Image (cartoon, rainbow, N blue to C red; front, top):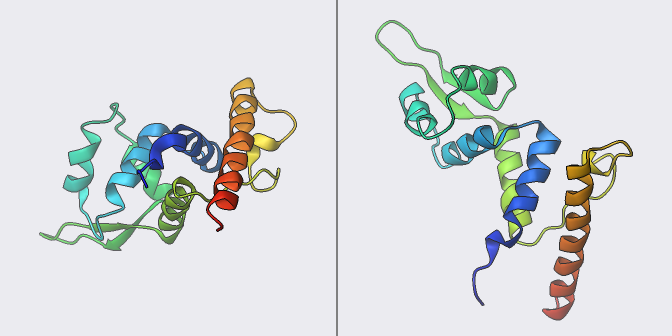
Length: 144
């Protein structure tokens, strides 16, 4: 079977951004840090240099609970950080959706299915419905 994980990447990414209030750059940063068990400010800056300039990105991610302090810095010792349980859960959810888990369509689980949403949200929710139907069809076809 060919690898086709990224077919719905744009839809999954949009859903995650809307649901959790993340920018594309913030999500990219969290995905980069996901494989790092622990990291310091230098590791953060290494990837941050590729993203659009935002001096406050690191502090925002800490303040919103996406990044946690693992070891507080002291004289001569740098602070060490890790991703929070919340972040790991969200990224695991991204991978699950790319591997065929449906995106929720209830208003409580997906803000795009509320009544007063933007035109973009309406377009994406139509694609989510189509994507979920495709996933269901694939599961029936392969007997999952």
